[in-house]
Image (cartoon, rainbow, N blue to C red; front, side, top):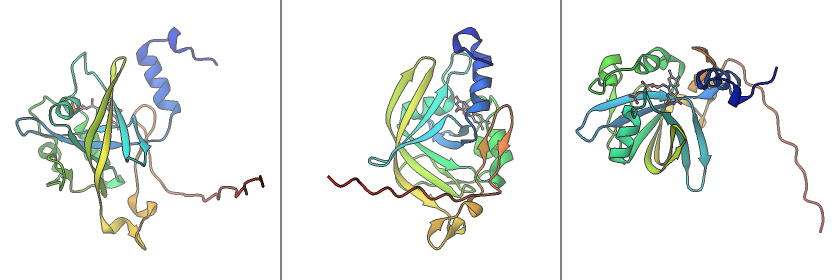
Amino acid sequence: MLVDPKAISPAALYQFMISVVVPRPIAFVSTISGDGRLNAAPFSYFIPLTNEPPLLGISINRRRGVLKDTLRNIEDTGEFVVNVVGEPLAERMVRTSGDWPEDVDEFELTGLTPVASERVKPPRVGESPVSLECRRHQVIELGATSFVVGEILLAHVNDQVLTEGRVDVAKLRPLGRLGGDGYSVVRDVIHLARPRVEPRPA
Ligand SMILES: Cc1cc2nc3c(=O)[nH]c(=O)nc-3n(C[C@H](O)[C@H](O)[C@H](O)COP(=O)(O)O)c2cc1C
């Protein structure tokens, strides 16, 4: 089968893309509006970009032509928190993704705990094992999507996901997004060392 992006509808292309680029990590993003309303929503078009400086990127689409609350809040305040989604958070994370009106506080809606951040105004999600406090670095308009580049200012890591000072994936239990309404969980991890290649003598 060949898939020509220009020959299918945007909806069909979206379904195709989300079923082949899998599993995707989920940025559960908490923000605050200019007038102090809390917001939380998941985004799986999400990627680490660079380490120096520490940048990550999230693609946020329009909803029927209108900015999503997350993007509007990031545009207004320049700040957000990316919370990692562990398995126990799955159902509440999905519940926040409904098309809730902007005055709905998804923390309240789902019983999630807003915990004050150290360097930014939006709170982090208390139930999340890892939260990354971010400042907007740049917003790049890419067609119908805004690509938000954020700089990580501070990371919070719950000690319960650590083994000997390192994040342990078996404790983190990260959720991944698949096609449709599918999600992946991490049950098996295989380890494969990269080949060591000595540089050729000059
Ligand atoms: C797991 C998951 C991943 C999602 N990823 C994205 C995404 O990458 N980009 C996007 O625009 N919407 C994505 N959505 C949909 C948004 O979460 C949804 O539109 C949400 O209502 C936005 O909330 P807001 O208006 O409070 O920002 C995703 C939904 C789920 C459940």
